[in-house]
Image (cartoon, rainbow, N blue to C red; front, side, top):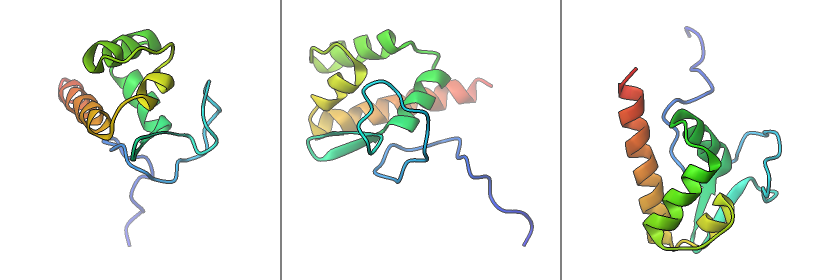
Length: 105
């Protein structure tokens, strides 16, 4: 056995996984995931994705509100208003952007 695989995956997928304990973010529910209509979005994945894309909280919020026609004062509130289909589309959209971003380096 030659060394264990690195614990941190670079291409994280948003799914209902047990999140690693992280410093409490604003408005974070205890399970550290945003739950909506039949979906969960891991907040650690969301934060890492936002940082990788170099998006501010406001940028992500305006992306969600304009793309999915919801009104909200925070990213977590906006994501909580999405339907399952919209949430899946959002995750796919972010992953596509992450793949483009990481292929630049």
